[in-house]
Figure 1: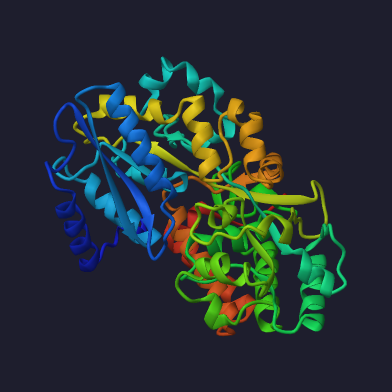
Figure 2: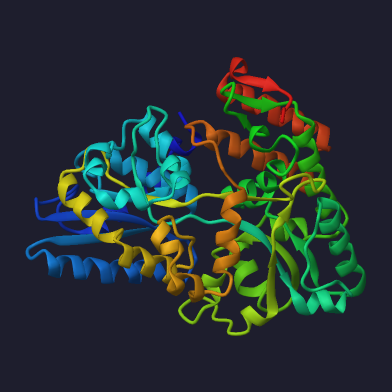
Length: 458
């Protein structure tokens, strides 16, 4: 049982309030109506998805007279959102007909019996062949069946402020060849640009999955162990006791113990990602940020922090591998997808709406307005998509060197252990060795010692 299912009474109460606020019939409703659940980030003014879905639902209803699409945003922190939708999908009386969630959580919901396989529908949907193989793999269960249709992915790299780099005497364009180059640039910023935070790398429990993915995993997968650094797919075992994990933790410790990052209290605060996107970067107070392809969605005219100068101020660089070993760069990818709950009352209409949301035209529009990386080959090659945001071509190009998290139910517990280890070295509470040892114990407890292996072999 994953940790996110440990719902609190507060979450259950919030769920009740959410359902009460939906109005109408609980569950899928009539054969002509569907309930669609998606996440509205807590304390965020970003309404891009809400506005997009509202337009699509209205067009769908017009094209299909008599149908009704009930859109239900769930405003919560990310972990609470997962808990809420799990609670909804447990019973026919509360389950939605369609749910939008992170592909990393799919197998957990599959294992719980919450999602329905889509293979029969996909077999007769010609558009499915246009989806990237990696994106298809990200929504495939451990039983080999497909449980969702992805509509976006993302990649991660280093955002840097060209003006601050110039003040520090650093070259622009800049391409670090190793972790040491990144730390060297951070030290130059600290020495020559007083008042600027040299480097942000997400850390700790408050950062949630941002700490795991944009933080430690961007380092860990860049070690010589690469794809086998966290989970060895060849042996189907989780890796513990590796020097690579300690090296990644040491990088985090170096950043925070040497004053090369935000203060620990800043970095460990709730919603720090919003502080990064809406304050520190636009105000020129942060020189480097290891972050995702989606950042411009905050800064475009329809974003929550319009910043017209972002494209002339910010530049991007691939995250280097640890010592510059081949292929020289690393990225991590995730993405969100549409799934139909196993207890949905109106799965046929839900599937029809999924297809409507994922035509080439609709997918292009979604990837453009939301500044996400396309998963359809035709959209990825569309000049309208490539030119919609100046950094789209860069982040799309990172796909060839990207990694996906292990899509296994226990991943969320491993991710939590990663965040705990990062937080303990960020605060100075633990040494790298002690934090790594605690992580090893947590992973063994979560997956069973027999499902781990020592090392991290390339």
